[in-house]
Image (cartoon, rainbow, N blue to C red; front, side, top):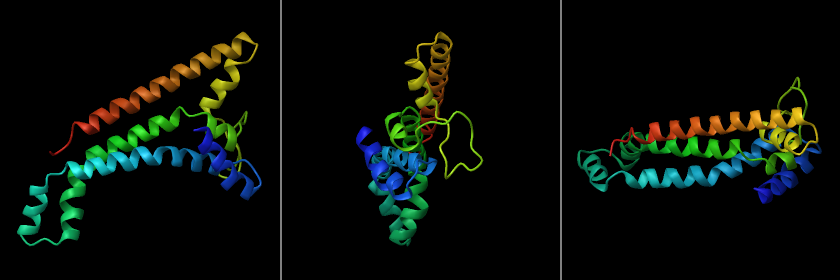
Length: 164
């Protein structure tokens, strides 16, 4: 994730000449991409070949087979991959340290400016010498863990809805 943060810093922050939410989103999207691509590939391969043959056998083209048979059958597993990718990105701090930095309040325009991030808040407050900031870091950690748990439960829910 540090390498992705440096890459996003080089590509987006240096190009725009400022830290921004756009750069942070770019970095997190790069981190999510391998998980989503891998689970989507596996989900599409899980659809039995016999189902594809049956669709083509009744006169559907390959395009319609993929569009109307294979993708709808793979949607639950694809949603699982997306949910797991989002859960992974939710806990990442390093790319955000390189691209978004941290803001104490919400800006007027989200795209062009820096915004608060829970993972960076946890990092900053956990190392602070003040006890109240450390308590806030623990509370934010609990909230972040609960969000990741919720995303994992959603992933399991979507994963159980598979057709095959």
